[in-house]
Length: 286
Length: 280
Image (cartoon, rainbow over all chains, first blue to last red; front, side, top):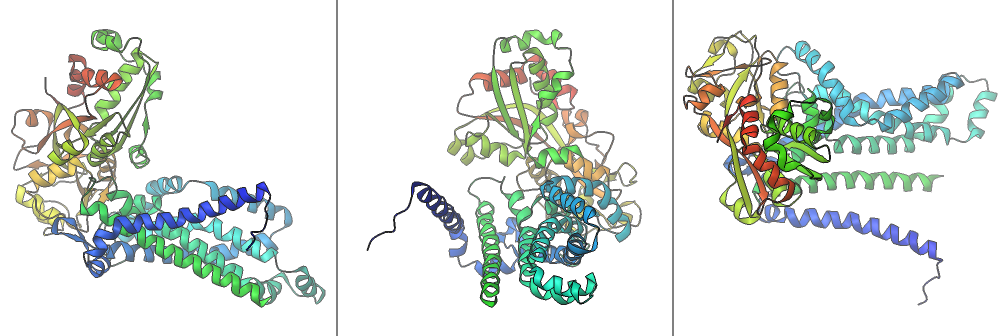
């Protein structure tokens, strides 16, 4: 068998691609290898469904898993309608000049570090939540969710705007020719054609929400109890990793965070697989 | 609140302190060893140590601007680990490293102060005196309303530190008698963050190093003894521990000079000024 001949630059790009692919695999192996002692000890069920009490030999990450999923879902529920509305405004509803300004603002927002949002919310939102809720510290899932929604919104908006503008002008011009309004164009033409792009944006946003550390670390309160309500202090997987990482070097606590990393990895990878499946589905359809 | 950011981002740059020229001239004897030195010194770990570390660094940098010193938080566990792995020149710990840690990492210790750890509440909170049992019951969650210990009828907001914290370890061992800390407690990542959290929450209880206490929080007397530098020094207040700095192997270069400075008369005066008990 003869290998196809490549130019030097093609080899360089191929090497870069192979390298990044291997890196992802290597990270998985690394997490798996270090998490193995805990996984092997037959504690997998305990890990997934028990609580975190290292003093009693319990290294369960159930509360963190629940918190991560809840927080990501709630912030998604806040962020999705807002992002969709925003991208409608940017692509069709606003005057052209305003569209450019809005888009520029959204682009700037993607670059603002999450610690800045969290910092501001710590001053403004936490005392407000404390007095609104009437009990607790003001640090809770409900406090972190809107801030996280703000963090993931720009990613989604840019994705939505992109998929809306990819809708062929053959269809949109036809609507204009028929005398349809902008709203009708959005609802009956653009949305049905651009929905796979919307799904992709949602998946990416959800992945970001799962992976964000600083917002939950600073605003959710970090208690290790499984949250019974949205107004209670809780800890996400990412905040858990950040908090436990500094602990001593070969304790079981330390080993357990590799398992947390593994779960985060698997969850994110599953999301990306979904992402791929939708893309493939979409490209087969058109 | 700034401290939260600093310790979360694990970095406090001291270079800016150059602007504040302290009275270094009176201390030039102990600082003279830094003359002609140059380079960078990285310090990380225990957050109780930070006030002393910052002041010492300020005086050194004022004396010789060629020296750069960076001070980060992260907790005692991180200080021990990073010093042991050679990631920083000096690691700080508010607990004595275990024999395993000392052996595995070949750590050398310098104990340069004694520090108390006390429970703190919001200054407006009337419950500023508790018995040991009450404190343990509050932390285990058995007592969950301030009215049961002489305060208002509101739920108690518990704050604790992460597992890497030496401050938490001594508080848990000596004040809580190794009793439970409720899983519902909020977790903050540094002495500074704890102080800010309690200062901003009228129904909070937390614990900080005595040297880190100021008027923004009210110390809680335990069995009638309030945590203060005086009561820790006299031995009347029992929840106390040593503050350590660690190096991997024998300290050398700037790290050696820095540690010598901390235990010199000038360094120990900083320790006193910042509310800790000197060892010399």
